Image (cartoon, rainbow, N blue to C red; front, top):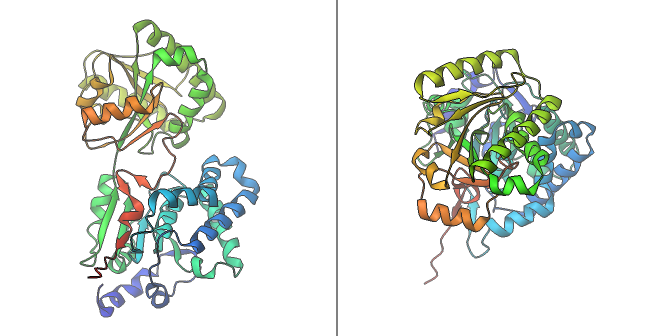
Length: 415
């Protein structure tokens, strides 16, 4: 860790333009002297369950399904399930210490999941929440304050510091200098900028950079299972809830199956999605301009594409005759999808680079997908999930086991 005089050098400028959301005051000496804990401590599990219960008491939670999902994630039954899968009682693991989380600006609830991962791994945590204003952030923060108002979980809430500040603030330099792990959720440019801030010699970064995701649908199954509205609703949750800004949001739709079933499936699926979007989605005018710009750029760089007729600006579909290796460069927010008919999943492999994160699927079983991954060994794709679950948080994310990454193994040799 840095010398005390090095840390003190940053103290004065840090607190000028930083907003302490929780708690309202920051006592660095006490906070930074906390000890790490074992992963999945019973006290943390009790605290998360209480937080889940408090969130479910909030009237506004019904308006924010992402907050409801977070509350569901934190309940005791789920956390115990996670413990059974991520904690080996035969090993002696301890949290690394102080984890500095820098949350993305475009996914409101991500900061809370990152915090929970840090707590479960046995750490005390500083979390920079999104600088934008989100009702979801306020809802989660208010529930946390209510938990802290009781004396039941003083030992846990003192391991949490939530802050808000603009990108130029020196707080990033300060918290980087005193952390054991720095978690950066953001684009490649954001990561490069934050990495200019020095870390202690034994500290390290965990980065979640720009990623690209897609969907694959087995039309032969889709057309006979007759649940297009349910699939469309799930796809809406994957994409439109975050305006396709989340790394896990699909931008490419790959159809598999015979020509007739693919044609029928496209017609049924997209009409169902149009229905859902028309009921739930409000397009920002600037995104309509972005879509037109994206289409012109894609058309200038690719051969044989065409835009399908559309009802309104909420849903644009760009048909591809071939699947270019740089398809991940042609994306846009707010309901802009490229789609391609592949004969087999193997046709996808040549385009999959290290930027590929999530594959959302419908109509395939686990054994098929596992055999395909073992055979093809793609350099990308870290998550394969059913359509509708791309934004479900997991302690395995982007190929990292967060509990193992955020804790250390203490080895004792008896003889």
